[in-house]
Amino acid sequence: MILPSNVVDYVVAFDDFASAISVPAPFLMASPLIGLPLPPAGWSPRDFAPELLWHPMAWLPERLKRPLTNGGDVEPDNGWVLRVGLELQESGLYDQVSGSWFDVLTHLGIDPVNPDDAQRLSAWLAGGADQQLDEFDLDELIFVQDAPEWSLEAAIASLEPLEVVARTKAARQLLAMCNETLTGDGVDPDEQAEMVEMMLTLGVWATCGDEALNTRIEQIRGRLDSYTGGLSDAGSPVFALSAIFADMVDAGEPIENDLLAQFERVRRETGLSEFAAS
Picture (cartoon, rainbow, N blue to C red):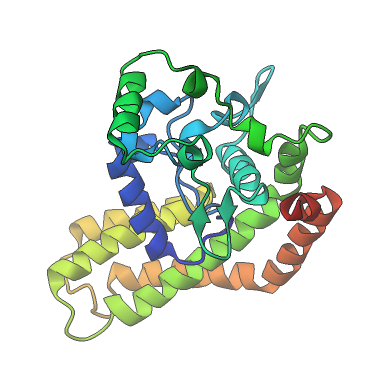
């Protein structure tokens, strides 16, 4: 879940998740730090479609439903995203090896395929009372009593290095897509245009909020609006977009391994490794 390995897979997961919960994409919290978007801040299980009630993301406890605030300070979005990702991954609710998720409804002994259970879920989603569903708290499975703020501490310590790693990983893949797909022979112009739009969107997403990089990518979008040549022609704005991704990779690769090692140190120092194994 932390640091998704493939940007295309992320796009598919993002679209599937947005469709499944019937939420427009702009209302989801997307980040290259984790492999699935977060639902809108403050959402409760009753806001989810019945077929997604099994997913732990539908049952986030109050402390994980939105960015933390401390006086006038608000937790950065990527900090919130990382905190949620750490809690779900390190508790074992997400299995990194299989890519599978813990099934909350199975844990509660509810089978949505069973007609009686399906009716029960529908009644509860409509506002009816159900003691088991009303009282279930995901923190029963993930809260660490002797280290209540471990994920916040880990996110604060590792956010900046993980943003660099995430940016580098995504830019490396986007660069390959630019060079191997957009500039390739025999690509349909309409497909090229769709790919460029996706690359621009993913490029902004991959910057992790870096304003300078965002500005450079948006400038390419502006150039494309008035560009009349072929997208694979020399001098096309697509080549400028490729150069931006190359710069992102060049800037990140020299320190990527060091930052990943630093994150592993944070995992050990905060007890994440022991927690994950428990």
